[in-house]
Image 1 (cartoon, rainbow, N blue to C red):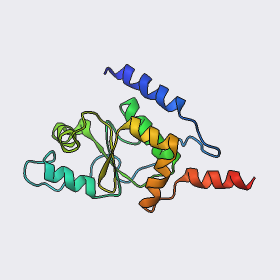
Image 2: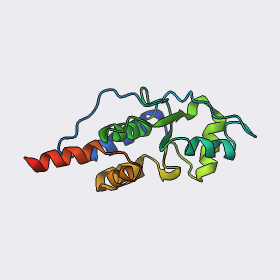
Image 3: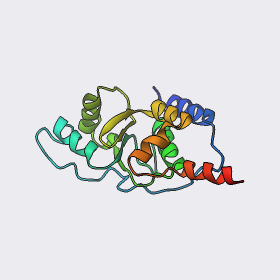
Length: 165
């Protein structure tokens, strides 16, 4: 998919997602290690090997393989994932820029048996890409999955505040 089509499709997906009461679009939130510069830990076959990818996926409760960084996503779908995480107040996650490492880009696709980027992992388990994360956001499943990780969604706090009014 060309770059402009990628941005347009992702923007339309995100626009169609209803914001819940009290939710706001955050301008800037730094993700821990979001520049993709964390060491991969060497290993056989380099950064794209199954063992290396396994270590990356399991190294943090929330891991995103994306195009660009959370501060500067280079694809509309990657941007949508970053925005959804921001809406939920998730700032502590590990992001890897697959454009910086072709071996990692192919390795994560092989590992998940999923052909597209971005890819989101929660507690070492593959969740899906932008479309799945958006669906989970819309139906409330993401709040529950984050709760299982000990992460309190900002949207659940916003809903409680709205219920008090």
